[in-house]
Length: 259
Image 1 (cartoon, one colour):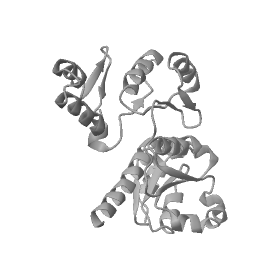
Image 2: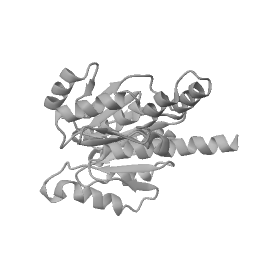
Image 3: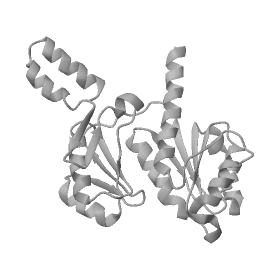
Image 4: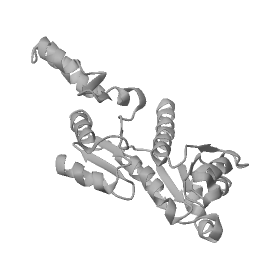
């Protein structure tokens, strides 16, 4: 339950429009709500962190995901499930009306209300190669479903660095950058040397055997000599998007204090 909904409920109690017993039933699941015996939905997460709970798809059956999404839809304008493969998405769409599937990002989303648009900044997302797109699109779709504006720049890795340098103006004007790269993972270091904003580096599991499923680019990013880089886990486009959103929201909060 968001703060506005809680305030409306309390006003209705005060005005005698709703009985305390009815209100009690609505408040029973204020902090979390059980879905049968396999899930407990954290309804307070949005109040604490500014972002609602998101469903992690792997390890759950389509029936479980559908039940969780249906319960969450009653309390959130957008319900997201990540890492959903196409065959699972088809089964979910048969159970959950109006469910949207983003195949590249592997995200299912159920929108039951208006997405609150975030009024400050743009999250710019850069990939080293086309093979990094699934992780990058996970970040992009997550950010958009959370109400942020997104700018994409794909396939500008260091193997053809002139492709990146031709977009110096975009990098220089960015508010926060998410840089997604596999192989040796050098791109975030190069971008951070050109940008005056925070850079969130996302290593991907793209690469030959010695990349160890993304460990090699992860270590490269952690050992970068360029400053202003934060690194999230391998293939974690979702986490990068949430971090970028929190950076922009913090900037907005500081601006509000100054006003």
